[in-house]
Image 1: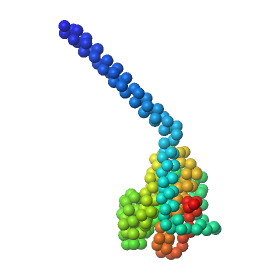
Image 2: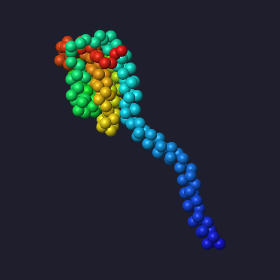
Image 3: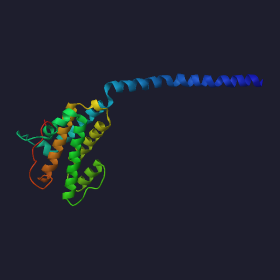
Image 4: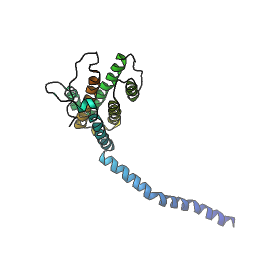
Length: 201
């Protein structure tokens, strides 16, 4: 009797495993298929494009940018970083966002509120609380930081030159808005008030 019970018990384990495998096979197949589909489409690339569209709208809502009238004959940040964009679009994105971080630090320092060693969104939030940047600029900076992070952690060739140029143009517009709001450059001069191009419209 004990032999039969033991036999039944030993057969129950493989049967249970078989039932579990049957139950999870379809969800597992669907998950794998979904993952492969995402890899084919380029998940970072797709997410970057979707986020960039939102940030572009945020930038266009910045009053200083919306009211800007592009002028010819002045070097834009896109022109300045063009060689880097050609060599490494990702590095160009990183450098462009670095300009925003530096500008926020300059604004806080000039206002007598030295920027602590915090991550960018915290510095931007502090600048907003000090009334150094507008809520629209804050939203744009947060979006640009997310794009910067996607570029930093994504696969190298998923950030194209065109995406990098678009990103740099948005950074240029945000920097313009920061300067225009206070009517001065980082050193307190009225230089570098060139209206942005490639974003409005």
